[in-house]
Image (cartoon, rainbow over all chains, first blue to last red):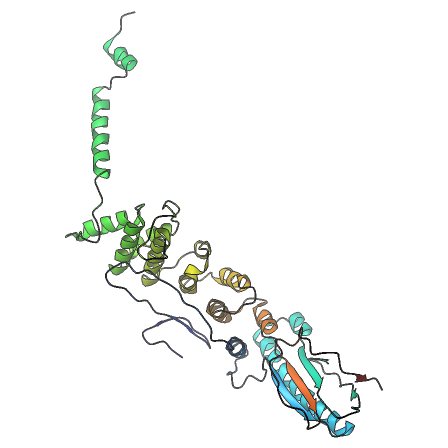
Length: 145
Length: 233
């Protein structure tokens, strides 16, 4: 996005422009108005992280608050669906971390500490609900309830 | 002992001929400096040399109105040779903080500083980051960022801006991050990942659940009731 008549001073995925205006014949008195539309903060951060990974925002696989549903039918199908979802999240996160490591933007020690938080929320209403089985362990995931 | 002419003069503090000449010259200089400075709103110098001299004089005045006019005209006339003077005028401590400004809500000092910063931006000046970081308050956040963007040694200053936001993402924060992302310093990417904190929530339903999945606000500190039982088998 560009600003008509504006001067680009911070190129990037969400570039910064400035616009100077004059009032009458007086020396200009400047005021800076800076606001981000509510809810766009995370979207902008996602764009920044995508650019650091040399990806477009659409290619970037991670989201600030992703929601996935598993419709519980049986322990076996639940386990299979859960494994598939966790495997996808783990490989997505690895792809991003690998990109940062490759570009030298992340130190191996920093990467070692990074974990993608995944929350499992049991919303079954049928009674009595059988406890959910323990999830499998993945390299980049920190699964909690 | 007879008093000679010389010793008499010294004793009586009477200036000699040369001293008298010096006093006359000094008085003349004082007389010149005490002349009122022409008002830039009405006075239009005919010679460029005089214009340049007056612009510098207005810039260095104690009156915030004259400083503002000086800065404005320096930029308008593209006098890049006066960039060091403009940078010097970023310290406006000599101006009375209570002096009134041209607009309601702006003190004279604030208005003058706004004009000085505007002139530096228009002249595409490179201002030392440490001078820019001495500008306090949110009033000049935009000007500071614009000028920092032109400074080759801006990394520490930009990091300071990120850290000072205390986790709140503003346009200032975003632009500072954008500038740092061009050449990320050590720790920058990690801090952005931690700030972004991507996370996923898996909702296990039985088909009777009403879907109402709001944001979890980062996922770590929200209270979603007691933990679900985990099958230990």
